[in-house]
Length: 113
Image (cartoon, rainbow, N blue to C red; front, side):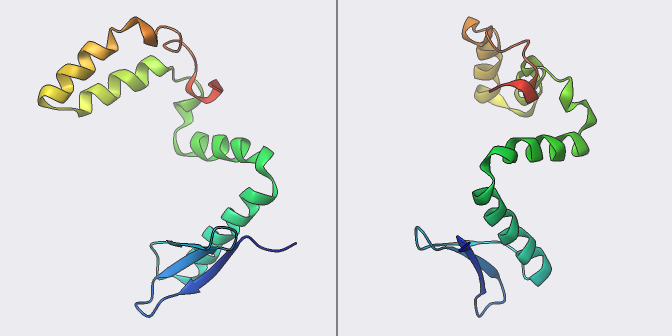
């Protein structure tokens, strides 16, 4: 099977991936060959088996934050608002009360389609 993404390195030592379908180059933001290989391999694997991508993402999220499986969207909204300042925070505080979020507030983050 033909690989969609190919790996190459520019003169500055940074590795890039080339999307052979779109002819688009994207920086991998690394000068480490093994890291670059892993990233390109992950991109190609995602193209080959798109159905498993969500399960892999959930596994990575659970490994980095064990509580993610129980977190609700209300927690995400509250924590995001805490990071804001000034008028932006005021908008977030108003938005938190908006009824349009009621449909997702109590849904677990990982189970949201």
